[in-house]
Length: 392
Ligand SMILES: *[C@@H]1O[C@H](CO)[C@@H](O)[C@H](O)[C@H]1NC(C)=O
Ligand SMILES: *[C@@H]1O[C@H](CO)[C@@H](O)[C@H](O)[C@H]1NC(C)=O
Image: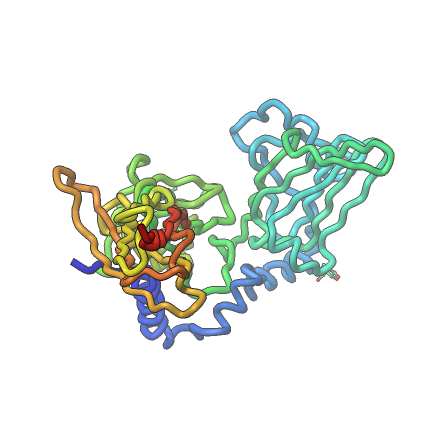
């Protein structure tokens, strides 16, 4: 059985993505635009802006916030939220700040560094400010929208002369929700997102909500069903979205989330889940030669063997001394199930060198590659000169 090689696997992926693109092209501009947009993942939605305008008109720029039920854990005490006019509260794991209002966080330390959701870092529109005071740093984010929802953290920086080190371990973190009465999901620039389901790797469907109070469910498009979220196979976390813990082929397809809160019900971006039989580790090739020293004119056979998982593609390539002078490569490839195992597979490539010459002496290397990476194995082959017949 000649197996599917990596190229074919890659092509299959490309083809399926293309197919999805064709299906969706009526809804979205699937090509370049989608890719460009992916670089700036969140755009402020129009409705978030209108909400903001309304709030601004009313002049309601104060913070209404309620600490969440989770008590602060150790190490987070140095982060506080500043409410109106010098009123502080210690933050817990998460807080809510109404969209449109100002977020102000204070972090004890001199100096401190801040980290904010990546889209805020990339797209500086002047709403975010950091000020370092004598004993603390202050982060201020004005004209907020649901899109600002995410993790905010500060960590101390230790300086010796001009050498400063950031101490991430001592970071104080808070997840900030910006409930927006019109946007239950953090707006996404993409109409859909392609997600690879890899065997043995948990898969995350972010569908981030702007309010921790929203009721979120997971749905399949065809056939239209709501998926059971049992907390084991699939679980939900309001800060992370849905996680499929052990992806299986039947999880593949188009999924989306639905959030409901009050009278409002909204769907998230679509997630196109593509199943990839993903290897556990890079392959480990074993190399053997029919003989490690041959006489000129003899035939050489070098065998490269990889034991792996069934249905995981492995590609084997060769490097050999004769390559330099353009000796053609004759290889035989084979893929066979491992007898006595339901999950094992043996991939083998045999390099054949006919009629050895001097130039064929040297190191033979085979490199085996799968989606996790590659490894090589080498063997040295000598060419023996027949002893010249000696005259008696
Ligand atoms: C915040 O919104 C107000 C009202 O729309 C506007 O005047 C102000 O410039 C905005 N501030 C920033 C920093 O974007
Ligand atoms: C959330 O969804 C569940 C299941 O659909 C339902 O039983 C519950 O009443 C909902 N809660 C709210 C606050 O809408």
